[in-house]
Length: 295
Ligand SMILES: [Zn+2]
Image (cartoon, rainbow, N blue to C red):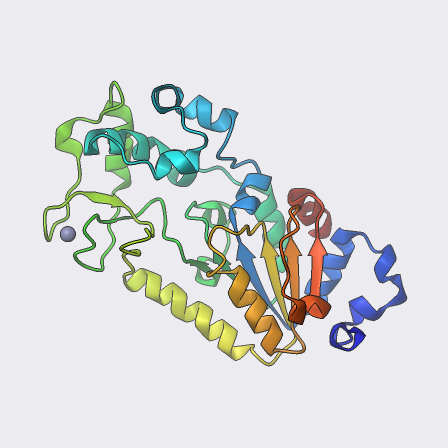
C-alpha cells in the first residue's frame, strides 16, 4: 500500500500525520506535476451559493409559497404550468446564479492556490462562479451547460443562444409569476420554446462549438499529462452525476500509479478498493481549508 503513495514525498514524510489538512493540500498541489480539479455543487454551497434556505426563499417568496419547493434545484427542474411562468422563474434564477452572481471567496482562494501551476478544471455547476472569481476560462470545462445559455427545447439543432438584456427584461416586467407572452423566446429553426441549456435524462443536452472547444481543451490536458504525477482534486462532488467527475477521476487514478485522488467532502463516499492506497480524504470545511491553504 505504501508503495503507491510512495510516489508522493508529502505522504511519506514522517510529518504527514501532523500536517493540517490545509497544509497537506497545499503541499500536494506544490508537488503535483499536473492538477485536474473537479468541482461539484458542494463547492458553490461552501462559499455561500446555497440552493436551500434563506437565499432561495428570499429570492422566490412567490414560487416557494405556490409550489412548496424543497430547494432551488428542484424548482429549476420543475415542469411549470406554461412558458410565461417558466421564464418568470428562470429569468430571476439566472440573474441570481449567473449574470449577477457575486464573487465566491472559496473560488478566489482556489485560484490563488493554482497560480503558476499546471491545472485544468471540470465543473458540473452551471453557475458563473469561475468567471466571477476571474479564472482563466480557457482552463474551465462546464460539462453541464450554463445558466446563461439557452437551447431549443426540442433539441432540433446543436446551437445555444443567449440574451442577457431579455433576461433582465423578463425579470423586470413579470407580474403574478408570469412574464408577458411577447417576451417568450422561441427556437429560430423550428419555433419550439427555448429553454435553459442543461442536460436532461431523455434528450441529453445541446452541445455546440463552444461546448466542444471546452471539451477538447480538457481532453487535451488529460492526454498531455496522463503519465505524470497527477493530482485529481475533487471538491464538493456528490453522487448525483458520478459519470462526469467522480468515476472518471477514480478510473484515471487507477490507471496511473503516480496519480493521487484527493476528495474534499464532509460526506464519506465509497472509494473503490483498488485506489484506496492512492486516495486522500479531506473532510474539513471546504471553504476554510481552501482559504488556509491559499495563503
Ligand atoms: Zn428547434
